[in-house]
Length: 215
Image 1 (cartoon, rainbow, N blue to C red):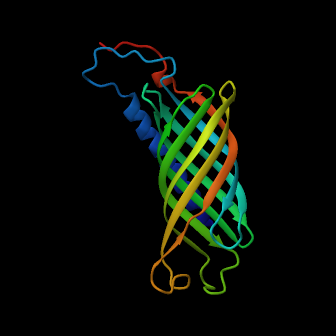
Image 2 (image 1 turned 180 degrees about the vertical axis):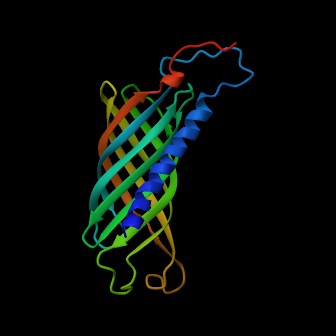
Image 3 (image 1 turned 90 degrees about the horizontal axis):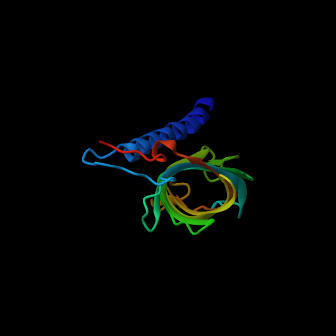
């Protein structure tokens, strides 16, 4: 049990670090053919966010509560929207069940003054734990599988570097075949919905924030 819990926490952390390392390397490497590169005062940033989460778990009770935590790497490319790479972890618990998910993927943000709406499409893993196991499957303590999610949200600037976050996410879990829950042989699926309220902290990414020339 201890090893299972440890791996559940370690795998998201390692994948998150890998995603941001690759993203940062790709975005900060200058093209070889460039003669000059002058970046804006805010060319990129890393943000960390967290907050309280209310969930409709799509199993058992109608709602559960928990938390959300994650980070984004955003480029400001003077496009109509600003592209990001996002990674997040969420966890909720209620009577008889707990659910958690690790997700990563692209995000697009539009800056409108102090208001920063965004959309995201994320992929990862969703997992549900039963406590106690369901009567129809007494040896079934949990299920996990592919999670494809999409959502919308907004950050609203409060003070320097700090924003209020409101976030909605529709998750779609494919937990594979489970004869106890789907005796017809079809895949056992869940569609949790999450609503989060929290804060976002903005870290200017110094690697792209200074004007420089390449010769």
